[in-house]
Picture 1 (cartoon, rainbow, N blue to C red):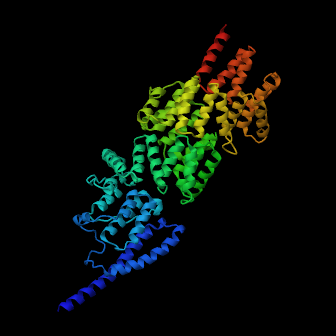
Picture 2: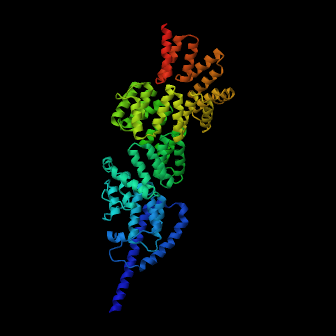
Length: 608
């Protein structure tokens, strides 16, 4: 009787083993379809090795006795607590980058113990992490979030539904990190996140200190810092995650975006170059390229990337707004205005719409009153937004007017209170020091700014400060760097380099550049070149005036040429004509204290 019983049990186990094998195979296959982008062409050889391990796994699974009904169930909490992850698997899950999660997946697939309850659990955890944090690696294929009460899976299900799992413990990596994943959940409301910010910060700080090798704590802290408008801290957190593992592409995209916003287009383009190897033709990467090239003043390449995106996705709002920004930078105000009109049919109160509308009416229509009205509305709607605060500060600096009865210093201080190292605020302070003629302070802050973010925009500002402070050698070295950074340097870079050469008394080099570029120059650059041609013939009155007139014919708003005309007539005691040209200079640059002082002096002379 005993022999028969033994036979029946063995037969039953073998039959059950076959069932388990079929269901196990199906389970692994489903997850591998979900996580297929993990594997590139470069992993073909390793995949062949995996096939051998799978056959080995079949043999092992066939002899393991597993109770009926436990095929895909999660073990009870007390039983699971007794189990411990293999150190290698634990390390890969804790690092939590796409590459390390891929390695964790392969570890489970090749585990000689087979698809144990623990392995079942962590396969589900991996698929959920990939879907929530790295959707591009799963083609946004949604996993089936378990209805099981197991704490990890229950927490992940809540996060996916936009509900913060506050009751989760804080005794290991996953229990610490799962609740803060609410920051990347598409269904999470801002109010839900705001309600638990303190707990999120506590969990992420603990996780960052206990598991410094993981990319998730710094990445999620970056998102949290952005929500708090602390872009400097956010950029540093994203940088930490990106440097820890470059397969963590969301951190790279965010780091590059904030670096470009801070004026460092080189970093943004470098990251985009790296990401494009694995995310070729990806829209997010193309947008990062565009932001990087805008920050590097290479508007041609920026336009190419944006046009590519808009051809692929005509309704992409981010691309449309960047296109408008590029057109404004290129002074193509008519085209920018048309696109903004089209955008306004969908949203007339977005911060981007109000900022761009303010820029267009200020720069194109020369209507500072309307610009202030748009920015006043923006400030009322978005009183904590840094871009709004900085735009308000800039126009207050330039016009010496107030917004909502607040002066420029109020808006700058509001930014610096939350983000003391904010580079955009520092940029405005340097710009204001230049306008006030405080060259020593402009150089001090300009060098500090470039020490933090050495982008072309910040270098351009520092060259201007060096020139004003009489530091010609430094200005020449830095302007040459800008001039040679591209085959087609921007008009501003050409102008700065020529000015530095002129201050260095290298007239031959100035003349050479004028000859090389004049024939193919656009109207703005022609105006710059004619201005310096005038300076080369300063002792010849007819040639001097002729070149200045040619400069203003090419660009009637060239401040340098207008100011030169003022000086010419002032020196020749024709104060009325001098006043006319100085008035145009002040209209273009109303915040420049030096010019307003000259106007007061001129008025006194005319009154005599």
